[in-house]
Length: 123
Image (tube, rainbow, N blue to C red):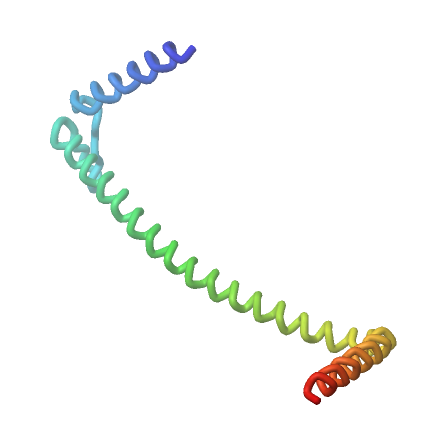
C-alpha cells in the first residue's frame, strides 16, 4: 500500500509539472480580452502569486489584530472573574460567620499560649 501511494503521488506530481511547463491551457481574461499561450500562463502565475502574497499579508494583519483583541478580552474576562469572586465572597461572608466564630476562638487560644511560651523563654 505504501509503495502504491508513493507511485500515485509521483505520478500526480509529474502531471502537475507537465501542466506547468506546457503552458497550453492557461488563459487570462483582462477586460474581455482572452490572453492565452505563454504570456497568458505568465500573467496567470503573476496574478496568482500576487493574490497569494496579498492574502498572506492580510492574514498576518488579521492575526495581529485578533491577538490584540483577544488579549484585551482575556484581560477583561480575568478582571471580571476577579470582581465576581470578590462580590461572591462578600455575599457569602455573612453566611460563613457562624463557622468563623469557632475558628476565631481556637485562633485566640493558640496565639495566647504562643505568647505565654515566648514570655517564659524571654525570662
